[in-house]
Figure 1 (cartoon, one colour):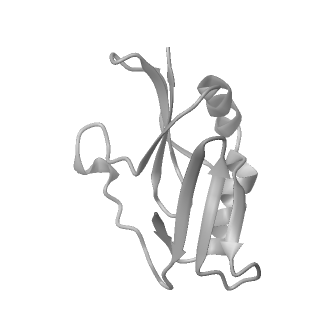
Figure 2 (cartoon, helix red, strand yellow; figure 1 turned 45 degrees about the vertical axis):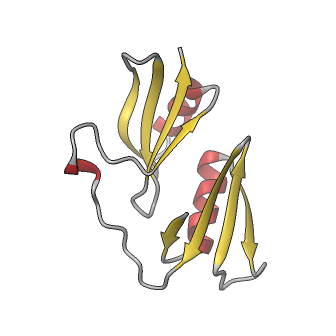
Amino acid sequence: MFLVADIATTMRWYSAKLGFTAQATPLSPPHFFCILRRDNVSIFLQQLDGYRKPDLYDQREGGVWNVYIHTHGVRELFESLSRLDDVTIIEPLCHQPYGQSECVVKDPNGYALVFAESD
């Protein structure tokens, strides 16, 4: 569950940039809740007016992640996201010693999303 200041803006970004579908409640803004879905992944959004997520990414070596999404096609996803001006790549695609290829993206609210695929 991610707290966000603006569900409508957040769900548009996840839909346009990452291919998630969005089911908001109520159907018309202002929304107070939303479920984002893609493949077997669900992310819940909860509205909190004025909320600003603290930036904790640099507080530990390797970053502070908010969600780890194990999926297929990570290289292709990274390449497509890398071409977009309004997507922040925190960590580029890299092979990890534990057998995963990962990249880390920051959403518009500051949440760190790791996309990973087994090598």
